[in-house]
Structure formats: structure tokens, C-alpha cells
Image (tube, rainbow, N blue to C red; front, side):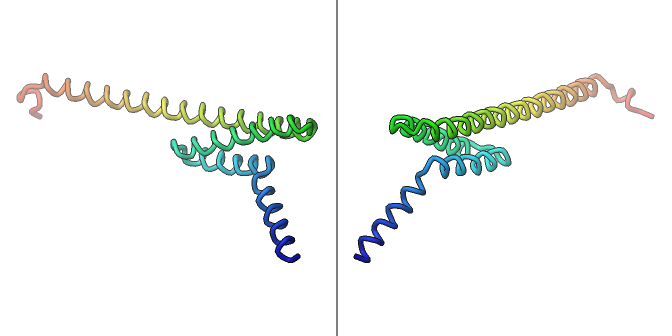
Length: 125
């Protein structure tokens, strides 16, 4: 009897670990980590969690739990929107850095170019 209760408890715990609410919470944490330090691995983790959440929502709808599915669908949309906003902000940040680097390169090139036309007499005090 104790083994049956232990097995049922384990199944309940494992089922709870795979709940859409927990998936949404995990996606939120992954989004925060991705926002703090974006990299391809973190991006893939977020994408995987969001896809899993969407599949879980679809399963709820198939099971007839439309109300719960709609609540989670709203959360999923917000998570997808947040993810997109973080990716756009990161892209803009990278573009800004690239433009600054190009500007610095042009300054260095013009400085070098200008120095190449100076003669030794021009550099004399």
C-alpha cells in the first residue's frame, strides 16, 4: 500500500513538473537570463520552452479545458512578445555598436591617411 501511495505521489510530482504553468515560469526565467546575457544557447532554451508551452496549451484545448488554455495562451502571447522585444533590443544594440566601430575605423583611417601626406619638414616645430 505504501508503495502505491509513493508511486502515485511520484506521478503527481512528475506531472506537476510538466505543467503549463511551470513551463511558463521556466520560460520567464530563461527570458530574464537571455535578456541579461544573450547567447545562442539561451535563445534556444527560450524557444524550446515557448514551443513546449504552446504544445501544452494545444493539449489542454484538445482535452476540452478551454478556459485554462485561454489563460495560458494569453501568458504565452506575452512571453512571445517579450522574447521578440528582447531580440529586437539586442539587435539594435549590436547595430549601434557596429556603427560606432565603423565610425572609429574611419577616424583611424583618416588620421593615418593624413599622416602619410606629412613630410618631415611639416612635422618640424
